[in-house]
Amino acid sequence: MPPSGPNDSGGYDWLYEDESGRPVSRPVPQGSSVPPPNLPPPGSGRRGGQGPREPERPKKKRGRLRLLWLIVALWLAFMVIVPLVAWSKITKVDATPDGERPEDEATTWLLVGTDKRPKDRSRGRTDTILLLTYGGDGPSVLTSIPRDSIVDIPGHGRTKVNAAYAYGGPPLLVETLESETGLRVDGYTEIGFVGLRDVVDALGGIEICPEQDIKDKDARLNIKEGCQEVDGKTALGYARSRKAFASGDIARGQHQREVIGAIGEAALSPSTALNPFRFTKVATTTAESLAVGDDVSLPSFVRFAWKLGRAMGGSGRSCTVPIADMSVQWDRDRAVKYFAHLRDGTTDELGKLCTENGMRD
Image (tube, rainbow, N blue to C red; front, side):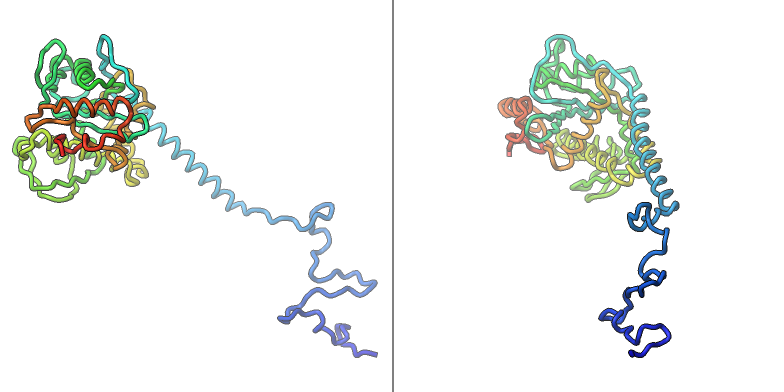
């Protein structure tokens, strides 16, 4: 008869151990009511013998998940509501000329910088004239029109392009540019000098990278060469300065495009988008500084702003209208070809027609 111990295992406990020496389940002697040690006690499984019940998710964890979803929903609502409220503060102006207008394949916006506030009904001067064109298979193109460009202004003869705004406001400026370029201006937006300064300050400053020391008394500017963070007052002076450069108005156009690009970069940065106080301030200040055509909708303006950012961010082209010399006479042959590509949406074929200063390479 085999020996037996206190646990009646007959000294064969080693049969119920795995290779690592850990105990495993062993058979229950016939007639015993004791369940195997590795089975759950009676009544602990699911109804109908479906196995063990899944552990319930802790209430604390579910509460945190609900809180996270609530924060996300509130943030999305905030990001939608703030621009909608800001849009209601934007000044609307009549910028649509009378008479027959050109048709083209592209979408073109006119961006104007003036020396007056948007709510000021008097006519100021335009120091900044930019055309943003997008559509077709090519990249977006931002074109500087030097304010001293000699053009034909309907009803006023041949003179500087910025005189069109002084003579007849936005409608006459739009009509003049449509006649000269063959492009249809689909959207109009305008910002005053004071507004530009305030927007930069609301962003906490922007980065500019002058290639030389600049001292311009008229622009109230005195800065050193190299990349640097500047406030609104300095950014405005940089965008207006021209007398410190041999290229004059051409250099000013380049600086204006640089400032606009820096504003777009700062506006899309995490320090702005993720800071509710700064985001609200920037949206409100921008809206109070802008005027747009009375036919401009919020979705179309958002698309314009997105395309403007892409044009300045490296995925588009930044050019000056083709000119023949630094007296800002347009190079008519090159200009005709240039604007034809913009009208046809073939901006990927611009090649050397697009240059920073407008001169032939």
